[in-house]
Amino acid sequence: MGGRLVLKLESIVKTFPGVKALDGVHLELYEGEVHALCGENGAGKSTLMKIIAGAQPYTSGAMYLNGEKVVFHSAREAEKSGVAMIYQEFNMVPELTVAENMYLGRLPVNNFKKVDWDKLFEEAQDNLNHLGLKFSSKTKVKNLSVAEAQMTEIAKCLTIGAKIIIMDEPTAALAEEEIKILFGIIEELKKGIAIIYISHRMDEIFKISDRLTVFRDGRYVASKEINETDYDDVVSMMVGRNVSNLYPVRNYKAQEVVLEAKEINSRNVHDMNLKLHKGEILGITGLLGSGTIELSKLLYGAIPMVSGEVFVHGMKKDCSAPVKALKAGIGFVSDDRKQEGLVLIRNIRENISMSSLKKLTKGIHLNTRLETERVNQQVQSLNIRISSASQLAGKLSGGNQQKIVFAKVLEADSDILILNEPTRGVDVGGEGGNICNYQPADAKGEKHSYDFHRFTRADRSQ
Image (tube, rainbow, N blue to C red; front, side):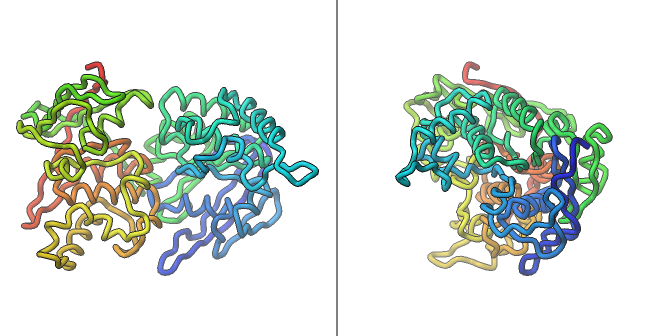
């Protein structure tokens, strides 16, 4: 159990218009522990964390911090009480320095009420050094790597004297070596604080956590010591049924080449060649900055090639722009869904249909009946949890946002999919089933099976 009880939630209920996001959930957090929060997309994890962090009030129930009942009305109130949250999407100002971001809203001032820059950079650097980080507090955030930005968020929590830190998918954009560094920092941090850890990567949960709590459909299921449970048990609690054979072995036989890239060159990609066969998953792997993401964007036309050729079904295609690649049947799922995959201020229906408007329009008129049918079919097929298609995309959980991006690409009749970090924020049920076994229906109602068989590995040198 760790040390003393620092946080307790009893029968927490949170309702939104027409939706009960949390229905009487419980949680206990002890000093010195890493407590994992598990559940499918829409289980209520993010809502509960926002309540603890002061971003949202709860409707009913009780929350106790160090034995005293509390209700936070803002994130600032929570921070003053020693509760900090590191969000999945970074919450920093790129043009400001690391130090300014760490102390944003709390910049130290001298006797003349001016910012004490020397004190600011010195204190910030001390916190970075405490975490074993080598970059300068004077570095602008825009010049940091993803891993360094993640570490800066943790260092920021230390500046407010946080005793409870909530980490939401902290490794989502990190490479293996960077994850090891993060885990080392977490092991040091938990000696004096408590950490709530949210991740869909089950191997991480069993490696770093001391205890876990499972939610399902906004309800509390169970809390267990990590050494008293296993992978299958946790997944079964999450989805409410026995889950076996998540990744079955398939008998794959190479078929015709559907995509071929020859001598692709750009600033970070050199002489890259690859062949993708019908029915296979071709895995491209490499460390951050190795060119894997750039390659995907080159093939989709999101960034220009210096040289190279792309063939689709044996025919040379001009993929110099996304609209041309999409016309050739190539769909693209970005690793950054918020910036490159969705229009967060538009609704779900508009996001899903935006890449397939040509088949939904006649002249200048949109066939709204057909659009609604197609959108509903995608929502059902991918098990996207929404209240209605009129809901804003920005209001969905990360995993459901990711499924909206998939729906948009599939609705455009793409038969070649380029996927960057496709399971980011997607729960274990979605990873194993909804996407890989997806069977879309065409306009005639006939189903086409995307049968993914083989996973191969490739890097720029192959």
